Length: 451
Image (cartoon, rainbow, N blue to C red; front, side, top):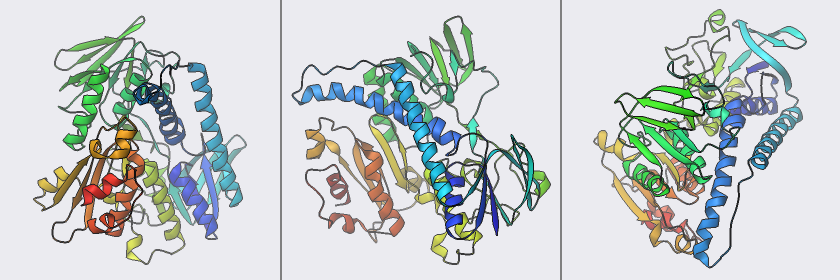
């Protein structure tokens, strides 16, 4: 059996290594970077910059811990070299894993020429490959509105900003979703003045209002200007400045503007019509719970599938698809439940959540128990001189089963894993309460909230 994968991001990589391990002959076609452009050119570089900004913020934090004289100056060239080094290291690691599993790796573009044929266009010419199964995992790219013309210098897309050619004096961020707020955090931590255009009445409009409020408070403390209830309709460059105009007439001028208003799937040029694969109005390829398109032996995963745009979700899709290709899918619990995927936002403080959200439960009229504990009551948070945020756990009042949770605070992205395991495994609040955790530790706040 031969599986041909078009796109070597988290989904394609995971599917390739797992399927090869299960005895499938695998060919992986990647035109750009093994590991995925959205992952290695967006996600990883942004987190590297956030880590640098966090280290600079730590220098200020430790001033309240009995340490004096701690200072730091940003070296933009050194940061750029570090990001390039991290990206190179991770791509090389991905290639080594694929090679160790005898995956055939082709550098070029792939497209369907029929239900069971894939054409790979490489520097050596075109090659037609017969495929018993096909996985489409071509990812996405930044969405660009008609009213903006990014030039890579002053008007930036996300991929122009890791880091930009020069550090902005005043950055105007357009978009207050996950990507937008991470950029606000990133550049304000590096010492830039930042303005954020917020189309709704709160940042992170799809998140818990209490979570958004903590983040907004931190932004205001740093001097970030929030333009709420304003939708950007123009971004015009005038020499060394950019003016962003909103639909209510307000305008803000900065040295740079950055577009963070979502992404669109890379579904063009894949020959989907030749194989009879359906595409929805947004350009996404719909799939069922096995990752199958309307053509059963053709699968889609990652951003292209229109599911949660998370690397962790894409990798899990790839794993499940590899199992399905070889027939190892008879157990119902192997199906992916996207409602139980944990996610994190790497701002300061960090934000993470999983499972049922409080607002959604109330909207559905569902009875829940909500318990919340502030980190201000946690010994380790006080010791670390960073007591911001809280732990919130949502459970079933009748059974005590944990349905979801949110964490705002230091290391939230790590701590949410405990609640994620509880949600996936159907654990009860008593299971966490009765666990003997380390003291002093931030994780104790999980037990306190569960209690």
